[in-house]
Length: 416
Image (cartoon, rainbow, N blue to C red):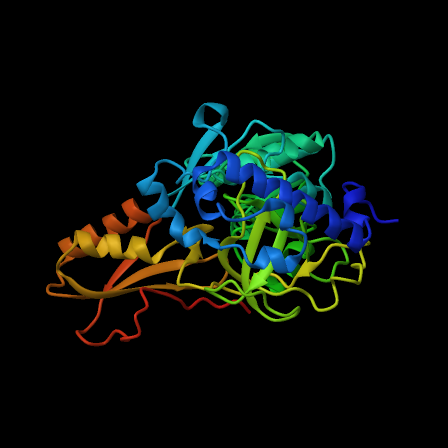
């Protein structure tokens, strides 16, 4: 019989829906009473009347792309937090910049459920390569692992040779991080003559995982599962053994809406992922537009997954509704490109182009500039690093050669 994290994963769909709507009513009432932003935009909403998906769809959507401006106007969280700063555990900062809170509850981001589905169990040593610096990804994984009774090695990123040596001496069973860094560690270990043979399971996120790379890991004895979440919302959906899509987390209510709008899309059609977090009293995000594209697996609202879980499933990550993209697991926003351009008035036009295969992202700023000297190129590259916290190349191109389509970011990577 398949194992499940708890009985919530296998409850009847109608029982789940009733519970979700009841929790929605409570969450809206809580947000209106305690979070200034939601007190404003939901002031005319009667929480007790939220008894259907149709009623939910009438509420306004708050998009992630709006957070930087809102948080700048009302620092540090834009008034979306219902718990004052003194009651929070951490404040993090992701590229944008966007600030995210962390509360005192165990497994505040609800990651343990995805880890359990990936085979993580009490007593495992989890080798966590997500960053603990600025962004919350490292802490998200750590708190989930602790909820399961796992021990965590906080490896973070970089220092590849030292990481290979740590893997060889610690011999962890489980890995948490991006798929590209896992591949790098396995390859570097083989080159150094210290193969990382102890790793048997991995929970990855932040990047695409094409079938070819999944097969590559399996050939080396590592069974990999994907998790979909954000620093704001925590876990949204996760992969399971034998599943037919990414199972939606039990702590959220997910809608697929028309990109940039608020109207729900029919089951099976692609749209923007909009999420309402239920039960998080600190940061009660309601109809939060992620900017990610996905779709509900047709029929999953009334048909259990082969793994036995009965919640609806997502088809996976199908792209972005805007120009925002991820490079080496970090979001890069059009506003950051504009910030770089403002620093260098010599640039007349520019386009950030992301190329390479999965695990080998290359970020290049194509520039039409008034001069093309090496000093300017180095200065622009330094600005890229400062603004985006990522290294990128600079390429000067002829005047008038960039497309006039309004795009500042182009994702030209291969995902085959």
